[in-house]
Image 1 (cartoon, rainbow, N blue to C red):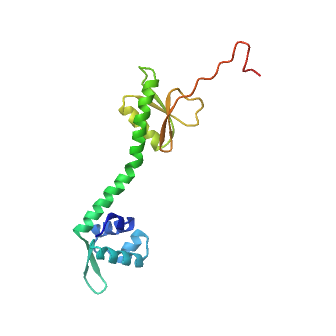
Image 2: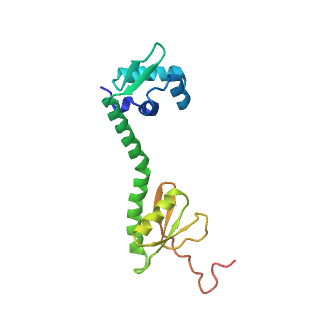
Image 3: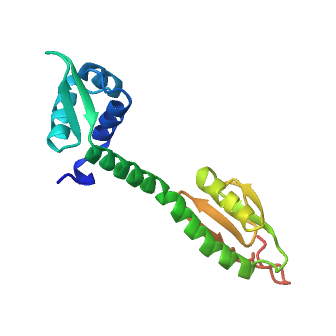
Amino acid sequence: MTTIDDFDRKDHEIIKLIVKAPDLSQAKVADRLKIAVGTVNRRLKKLEKQGLLKTNALSRKKNRYSVTDKGLKILEKFAAESLRQTFLPFRQICDQFHVVISEWRKLAQTEANELVIYGEGDAAEICRLLAFEQGLNPVIRSTSSGKRTNPSIEVFGLEVRLVQEAPASQPNAKGAGRK
């Protein structure tokens, strides 16, 4: 029995091409996928053996390939799993944001609605959109911008964390802290 584990991205691409153009030659499939014709030939034979494809000989040198119902189901499962994997980092950022924003609300002034987000890139943009969704006014600042607003959020890679810097110590009356 063929499982999604027996099926890789190249198999997926081959089957997608066959769905769109069943009359493509092995050479054209190889050209479009940037792989060797021998590799396409081996994979087509493997996919047929697994019951995912059927081959109909049109002539001595020409075949027409069709995707079986089993092949279409595996194709659908592969697409769903790829989509799930693609969204994992997004979900991770969302989950972290919701935990951090809950902590931020406890530390921020009761009427505060401006949220400073230190970070760059897609993860910071996701946090900005989530802040809008929460009714906040997000302001994104570069991670290299000096002193942090207290409290704020920092996004580094796929990590979202609360920034809560301690206030700078005050010099005493006798001028301690001066050189």
